[in-house]
Length: 313
Image (tube, rainbow, N blue to C red):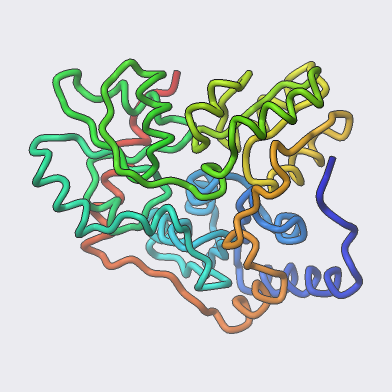
C-alpha cells in the first residue's frame, strides 16, 4: 500500500518552481524517509538523516535544503560547514533529541567517571560535542562492539535502541531514559493483532521500538535497512513497525509487494511540518539558516568521524 495521493495542480506548480529555483541557486534538496510524499518526490536525495548529510557534503551544491528536523540540519552543517544549510520549518524539532541537553550529559559524565559516551545521531550538535562517538540505528551494534571491553558504556538518548544494542552486542550498556514517542507508542498487543490478521507477512521494526515489540519481529532494521531488505526479499507481504512516511519510498520501489503499517497512527508531527510552500520560501529567502558554532562543530565532528571509522560487518 502507499499512503500518497496524486499531486494536485498547485503541488505540481510548486514542485516545478522549487526545482527551477534549486537549479538557479545550486541547491541540493534532501528529504528524510518520514517526510510527506510530495516533499520526498521533489527532493534530489531521500534517505535517513546521516546518509543524507554525508551525500550532501559530497555534492558540489552551495546550498543544502534539509527537509527533516533540526538535529539533521545541524548534522549537515557539521559535515559541510562551508555550505548554506536551510531548514524550511525552523520549529521542526525532535522530542527525543530534546530529552537530553549538553549540560545534563556533562553532569552524567561526572557521575559515571571514565565511561565511553555513545550518542545516537538523533541528538543536538551540543550533545554530540559532549560524546565520544556517535551511532546510527544501522550501525549501533558495531559501534558498541568497537569499544574496549573494560570500558563502561553510556548511551544517549534512546533507551530502546540502547537495550537493543545491549542484547545484540552482549555488552552491558547503561543509558539515558529517552525515547522516540512515535516508535515507543507501538505496543506488542497492537503488533499481535496485525500479525494475526496477516499471518503470511514478515514483521520488520525499527530498533527505536520497545523491546517487547522487537521480540516479535522477523527482522529489526533501520529505515535504510528496511528499504534494502524488502527490495531484495522474495517475500511478498510485510508489516512495518516504523513511521508511516517510509511507505511512500517502499511502495515506489516495490510495486508488487503488500506493505502494511503496524499502526497507522505512527506519524511524527514534526516530520510532517514541512510542505512544498515552505521549501519554496526557504529557497527564495535563503532562510532559516542553521549553523553550528565552530567550537561545538569540531568536537561533534570528531564523534561522527569516530563512528564512520568503525568497520561495518
